[in-house]
Amino acid sequence: MRRFRYIIAAVAIVATAFVAYGLFTLPKPAPADSDSFSAERAAVDIKAISQKPHSIEHPENREVVHQYWIDRLSAMEGVSPVTYRYDSVAVFREVPYDIENIYCKIDPIIEDPDNPAPAYVLLIAHTDSRYTMEGMRDSLCSLGAADDGYGCAVTVENIALALKYRGEWRQGVKLLLTDSEEYGLNGIKTALDKAPEIFENVGLVINIDARGVKGPALLFETGRGNSKVMDLYEFANYPYTYTFTTVIYRMMPNFTDYTPLKETYPGMNFSTVDDINHYHNEKDNFNNISLYSIQHYGAQIEPVLSEYLTNHEYRDANCFKSESDNVAFTIPLIGLLNFSKGGYALVNAIVLALFCLVFCFSVMTGRIKAGKVFIEALKLLGYSILAFGCGTLIAFVFSKIEGVKFNFMGGIVGIQYDEWIMICSVSLMLLIYLLFYRKNRKRSSDAISSSAIRKSASASGATKYSFKVLYGILIVDVVLAAASYIFCGENFLFMVPVAVAAASLLLWRIIRWRGVIIIGVVTILLLSFSFCYVLSVALSLGALGVTLMMTFLYLALIVPMVDLYCRKEKII
Image 1 (cartoon, rainbow, N blue to C red):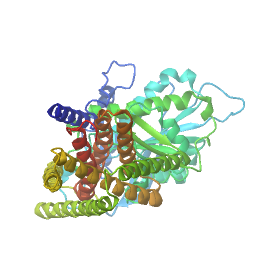
Image 2: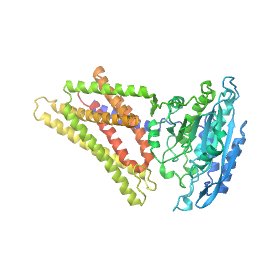
Image 3: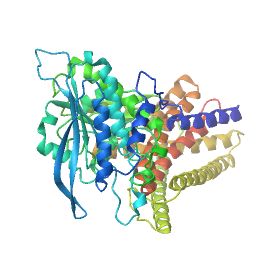
Image 4: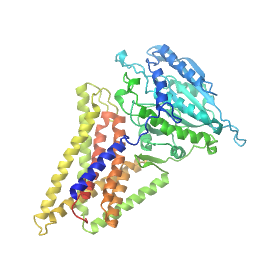
C-alpha cells in the first residue's frame, strides 16, 4: 500500500506540473474560420507587419507598417481611423524624428437619455519595434512580431469581433496605436499633451504589450483603486493574474504606454513575459511567435470587452474609479480568487486562527514539541537564505562566464541556456534537500528506536521528524506572510500554503482519510509551480536567488506532507 501511495503522489505531482505550466489549461489556438477570437487570424496581421524592422530609426519601414494598420482598420464597417502626426517631437542619436499615432473612435448605437455622453474603453498598443541597441550589430534589431505585433493584432481582432454585436453596445470603443513607445513613450505622452479629446469620457484602458514571445498572457498591472476593475476581470476566460505583480512593477524602472495613464484612468495591462532572450532583438520575429500566447490574450480580453460594451452599468465614465484595491491571484485549474481588502484581511485572520488551532492541538497531544519546532523553523529560514545566496552566486558566475552584465533581481540578457541553468539549479537543490531530509529522518527514527521496546518506535520517530519539519516551515510561512502583509498588503505566496496545509491536517484528523493530504499537496503545487514560473521568466537569471528561495520554502512544505501521506501507519 505504501508503494502504491508513492506512485499516486508521483503521478499527482507530474500531472500538476503539466496543468500549472498551462499545457492542459491554456486555450488552444482557434482557426481562421472561428466565430470567436482567432490567433490564426491575428497571426496574418503579425506576419504582414514583421517583415522588416520598423523602429524610430527605420522611418520608411515604419510608414509601411502605419499604412498597413490604417488600411486594416478602414476596411472595417463603421471604422474611420485618423492620424495624428507630430514633427520633431524628440531627438534620437542627435537626429530629430517625427511620430504618427493612429486613432479611431466608434460610438455606441444605443442612446441613453440619462447619460447622453457615453463612456469608452480605450484600447492601446504600439506600432514601433525596438530600435538597435547601442553597441550591437544591426542584425540584432527587433522585427516587432511580439513587441508589439501581438498588441496591435489582438486589439484589431477584438474590435472586428465586437463590431458584430455593435447593435448591443451601450458604451463605445476608442483605439490608439501609438508611435515611439520604445523610445521614451513619446507617442502616448504627446497624445496626452496635444490631443486631449482622445481621453475624453474614457472609463477603462486596456493596454496590450509583450515582453517575450511565449508563455501565458499575464494581467500584470492595474491602476490604483483596482477593486471594480478586478470585478470586471472576473468575466475573463482562462484568467491569469497576480495583483502582487502590480505592487512589484511600481518599484521597477520598466514602463509601458499605460504608465502615464495609470494614476488617472482605471485599466488593465497585459503582456507575455517569456522569455527575455527573445525580447528587443532579432529573435522577436514571426518564426518565433506563439499562437497559444496570442489566443490567451484574446480569451481574456474578448469577454471582458463584451461585458463592458453591453452592460448599462458602465455608462458612467467614472464607474471604475475606486479608492480601494483588491487582492487577486489565480491558481491554475481553480481559477481567479478576488478579494476586497477587508475580505482578504478576514481570510488572513481565519488562516492564522486555523494554524494556531492545529498547532496547539498537535502540541497538546504530544505529536510535536513546540521548542523543537521553533528551532527547526529557524534552521529552515536559514536554509532558505542560503538558497537565496547560492542562486545569486550562480547567476553572478554565469554572467561573468558569458561576459554579460549582472543585474541583481533584474533581467540578464545574453546567457545561453539560462532556462536550463535555472532548471538544473532547482533540481540540484531538490536532490540535496531530499538526501538531507532522508538522513535526518533516519537519524530521528534511530534515536527513538534505540531506546524503545515497541517495533513501531522507528516509524514513530520518522513521523515525529516529518511533523517537526512540517510545522517548522509553516511557522516560517506564517512569519513571512505577516511581514509581507504588513509591508505590501499581499501575502498569498505564503498565506495559501499555510491555509491549505493546516486545513489538510485538520481534515485528516476529522475524517481519518489521508487522501486530503495529497489534495493539499496538489493545490500548493498548482500555485507554486505557476508563480515560480512567472517569477523566473519575468526576472530571468537575475532573480535565481529569489526563485531558489521560494522553491525551497515550497519544497520544505511539500516533502513532509508527501512523506506523511505515504507513511505505513493508519492513524498518525
